Length: 218
Image (cartoon, rainbow, N blue to C red; front, side):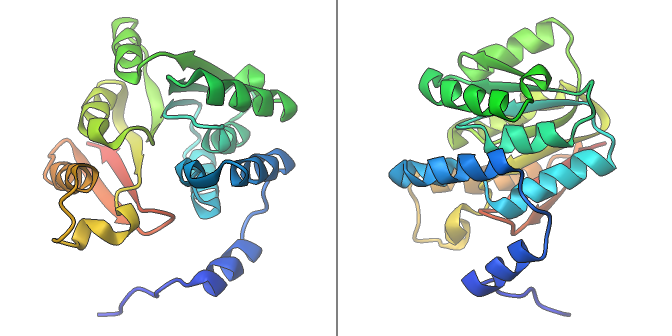
């Protein structure tokens, strides 16, 4: 059986240089995030931007739900892939970073395809269920302790064959380190096992960025 390639910084740069090119505002968001210090880790990777873009394009997605927006890189990456009548509903509770994100959306001319909701995501998810909203594609990248709750709520918001993508499922590789028993690592480890045993979906973990789980609702 072939083994996966270990991706070092040089190979990562090669991949970036031989893949899709970023929009100028995507680049601006990345540059802005570099000024934020350690919190910039909340940004998705460039390869993840491209994967989200291609999944939305090839699956002809029109309505996206995002749980966790930060400064808007993932939101914008998905919006740019949508048709003119597409929509991203982006959930976040941080007003400050949301204001930054919205300004980037306007600069990119995408504000007509993005609706932001500022309140705790579990409250927003309940509201969306109560109003019988349905989505084709859901991206989860928020507080990891609530991943299981977000995942279960998301399954009620998509139909058969809908996609749910969850970020940070490899957690810097710490999910396989038995010595790591901190709250976040344990929560992610338990969540991965939960999804893998869930008969409502079929799933695949791919080692892009900090690890993505792709689920298809059965």
